[in-house]
Length: 338
Image (cartoon, rainbow, N blue to C red):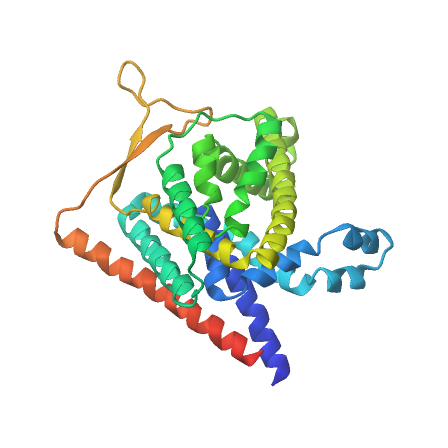
């Protein structure tokens, strides 16, 4: 019975990783929200905090088992396995759905954000001047970010490293979408689409025994970009986790209120009824980046008319809320078992 329960826990950890990975890929949605609502956010942060000087000493001394136990390796490895699988599977499906069913996808995520707000707020009772101010600052920051205009693509490796640090913010800070920040920085397509596709194509070539990509300058450039982006992401993940671990320990109420504010502010990013306005050349044609993708100028939000499509979108909003409530139920059940 215990082994079955352990296997079930492992499967659910991978599924949680899938959820975080998929959420991190979608602009406006934060993987940290998934962790927060599913009840493993603090364990995630504190486990990342264990990747420190002591951990590296154990690793360099060849004490691999001690290193694995020290950093809560089983938890982190299964979670990151889910995220990795997500980037090559679920995220691809989401890319397709956003292109063909954009309104309904955003409606689901909008509902998930509303459900997350309900979840965090219902158990939070410490409302005072400090927490209200923290909530207000979080809301204003979230709204301000949602109305910024995207920059141009930049493949400078130092800037890519910085993007890597920023991109993981969505995993460590609920309500703060790393992928949306990458859009604002102009590098979403470069780092989460083109470079990932380059890696996928490279693996496919190697599997076929084709190493001609070595002489492909564009492919090598994209792989370098992905490598630097990954290093930046790992750096940001470990750094943020140490900072957040300290903040959660000493200022938990203020931090929770700020996170709630961020999530409320992010509703503007995932508002389902919006049109993407692209930058145009003087002749009226679309302005393209180096990868041939249209460059986003801004997102025009509007109030929908009440028609069949709108009612269907509202149904998907309630479906998104139901997903969060189901995650909450599972999180509570897991904590009771432990």
